[in-house]
View 1 (cartoon, rainbow over the protein chains, first blue to last red):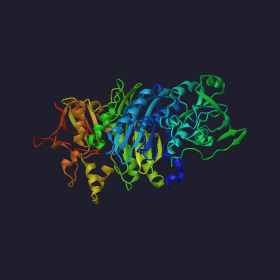
View 2: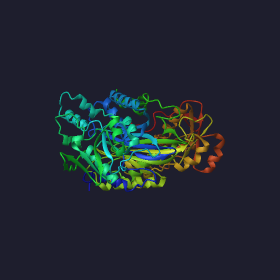
View 3: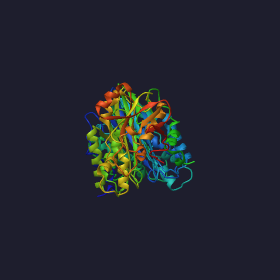
View 4: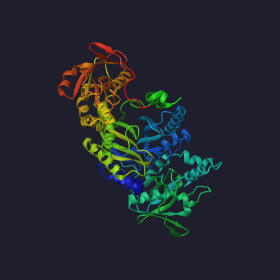
Length: 307
Length: 307
């Protein structure tokens, strides 16, 4: 049997079965690992970006440098943590122009500065195609990290920003559409929601960043929390773009917005803060259901496929 | 200008200039980053292995899984730390057989168990060629991490194991020589010297693991500590292999032995422990000199080249 036949989550489960984290540590399966350490919790996340898969030789290296770090910072935000230190492995062809490196590092460095992150190490090695691997370490107070697996029935479900803009931007780029710069930048230069995460953390039971698509990421909450999530179509802040459908926006990845499950008694408070919009609720069940015009639509097999 | 023209260290310096670590933190340039955290120091190291560069499609995946983790654990050992947690990014072709994955993970897991390390997270993504990136986090008591940059003039220089066996093993594999299994395994399955590092830590001023070759790694000590290192040819425990020269062994990489600079007053004590052999001393200067039959030989441009 081959990797493509079991897919990303089959592969992760195949690896995971060998490793049981010690008591109190959150290992494989959330946005970050969470390690109690002294009077704090350490958060660790790592992500690979491969040329030809996640970006192309022609991709703007400055924006690529920004995005590479931003998507990792977004994983720290998803746990309501504070990003601190980064590590960069850069596999690169010896014929690559140094200007590419300089632009990549400038982008990386600009995001690092914006979020108070410092690059402390890494590895450089030769490779035909560029492969970027970034590890970000963050911290949190003990017990404060918001997991995927702690949503509670009755919570309201809320998101930041607009859903589907990154996907719309990607479509605009792929089709060579002129204009739509704001959408294209949503795809090329996502902004991790660290501040919004810190503001909502005391009201939320669970959180995730929307990287695989709204429906798929709600599915992660369902599976890890053993609950259902009901979303109300009319409440979802869809992206304004008429060349992709709202169905596609529900499934498109890489928004890097936050999805939080918030205790219902804090609903008004969170609405008043202005960062989050309520789009649904946590219910009995084991899957995502989307309600449109009062009718339940089941959306299956939706979202970014890694293999 | 292109990456190949400035080489690995030129590239690292080009990246490093953007990032100044906060006071008290050791950033880019040692075997690990060192971060004071609560009552401990965190150690973080990351390494990428690329198919076609560091290994081949035909490489034994069990041994590759072992080596991938071992070389990272060796960086923690080089700082005299205790390895704790690992993170694995696996970029892999969707057509790769799952047996390959299972064998790779079994190798990784066996080394993890031997060294008390737990895999806590990672990333899986598709890629034409396999790229493995591993991050290992370790810990140490505050101020106990042994740096490259703290060797002192008068220290004696000591190494574990034999020098050049990994290189001899690589040559045996590349030439298709029958036998020499012990040497081949030195290359394919290096053993990180965590225990030896912990035993020597209270006697040493500085330490490094020999990954780029004895002479090149001594050069890193020279540069970071602003000293010279004098090695005595006759004292070096060369590998027993008559199909590579001792000159080649001085430059061959990937031994993953330790090189420690030890306070001279502890020389006899360290000799008595049996892990380390004294091969030289730290002297005034800025480079490595090798003394053979009482004459100084300068060895230049020696060791593993990443680009």
